[in-house]
Length: 211
Image 1 (tube, one colour):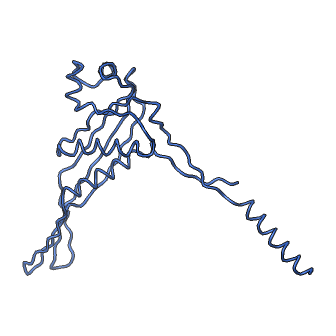
Image 2 (cartoon, helix red, strand yellow; image 1 turned 180 degrees about the vertical axis):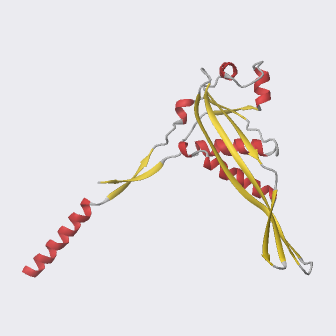
Image 3 (tube, rainbow, N blue to C red; image 1 turned 135 degrees about the vertical axis):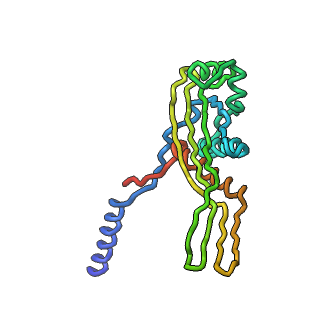
């Protein structure tokens, strides 16, 4: 009987000790609450070297930014040229942002740019008789939020990434092995990665707290 009581006491102490050191996972809200900046106008991100990637980067950024924020009112305003023409301005300065806010009824304006490098070959020597070459592309996405009423920058962030588009190897006996990925898929994956990389401030995080 005494032995059984001693065993029970040990279990209680063990549970109490576990309780004292137990931790609970707690969600931390996003650093930026997009609802506080509604209505948000987004000017299409340009991409000089790949025109089609500009609208894609714009869409992916919007999706990533408000994915965890619920219903957020966002309106796409068009390209910078179209927006500036609509407000009779020549450049995106403080006066232009104020005019855009009045014209389109937006409180916050998002601008950005996708900078994509030319495809660059990388050479590798696999052996004394085999040479390999791969095609890589690098990109940077830069985004900022501007207060329409003042033209002041509220937030900005940029991120870079690279992707391998394809490659080939050449041997001394003139055999050629080609490994070419789908460029469209590679570029889309690259844009998706960049959009996610520039939007952590709009997503909740998790931390452990002791009870």
